[in-house]
Length: 561
Image 1 (tube, rainbow, N blue to C red):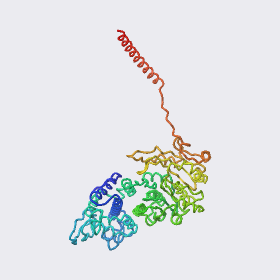
Image 2 (tube, helix red, strand yellow):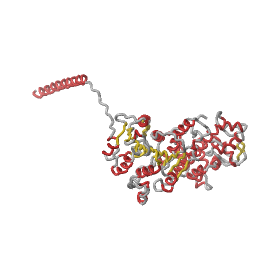
Image 3 (cartoon, helix red, strand yellow):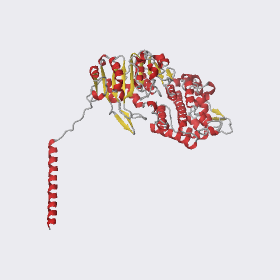
Image 4 (cartoon, helix red, strand yellow):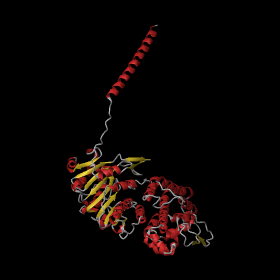
């Protein structure tokens, strides 16, 4: 079967199909949609990515193919000897037979109510052993696949969403969805391919946000929490203008969600790594990068951990399930305070209380050297935490609400950051870029060791009009702004440096309109043509007045008679 690349519209269609099946055929409600949908889609992603990896054994030039040849082209033997080298797909030895299973094997499995022993050819067309099983239906086979995985993070995710009890229970009346109706979902998903070749890297962020947007009571907006679109993530990373370091670095996101920032960072940094080592297979990328993330929401953390695992970063990823502000000192801070090289984040906006009272009691700690932000200014609490995490040459790009640039109540914190000369740049982004909020945002580019050319000034870019409207959402076109920023191009009405002296005179107000005004294009006026048009108009008016005068005179004469 040929597959197409999955679009966001395809994902919405899949989510609706699962939700409709639960609603129309089951006994569940909107609270069950999340668990069943994300749980089964994560399994689908895992199985499809494993199938993608498995094909490497028959692809010439790959390490897996050389192992396949050394094992007499016996796929079962090759997997038995090699599966531990891809831990995200590894299964328990007693369940090695499940490694060969692909989604199609599950979707096309025939009911076996008498539980007879059957021998069936695997559908991966790789030869080897047959599938020998007495399982009674598709659902039982899928359940075996789930339970066979070895990695603890995979079971953490399945335990978090815990959808099996909702579709398989000893008492049918306790099931949200009967197993044979759940099989309809299995069969529907066989129409799609969730491997990296066909599905975007932030697929779970898209699915999760779509579910929140449609079914959660707060639409994902509670506490300003939402996932950052991949286009925004990829654009923001460009403003780090990162350089490869000849040592292990620490990269962090203290509000990580589905870890899209970390995965996209890895994609860019890996290209720098490969260029530096010229593809030397003896040097491993994971030996040069440690990822450290924090996330207080259990579901979001599970998605992030799963995403990192499926991209091969579980061995060098440290994940904290904690509040990155109130539990910082025992989690993120204890692990990597003043050690982070690069940090990317989109913290929650508009928190009513980020933990002000608790932090005020700890105002003596170095994190609050600039003061403890007011109760409703959680964005600055995150900024202070980010500054505490960065090492002496650390850089960060942070997505923040536009109001952080100019609110009078927060001018003190801007003043202290700017006086330290740690703010390298500001980029104002288009509005309406998120699925669950239209709030206008900007990028803060923080650099604790600015280049000489950037010292005592800030580079500002107004990218608010750099977008393409896609449905209700504006998609940021980042090329112009990132080129202007990284090349320090001063473009009238768009980008340029502002001196700290000028910012000081403006009382540390960073509103971009105070420094960069959009140039208004003057309309060219043809005076000769304009004069001609005026004369023609006056002639017409004169003719109309004469005609009106004649009509009035005629009426007067009639009246006299």
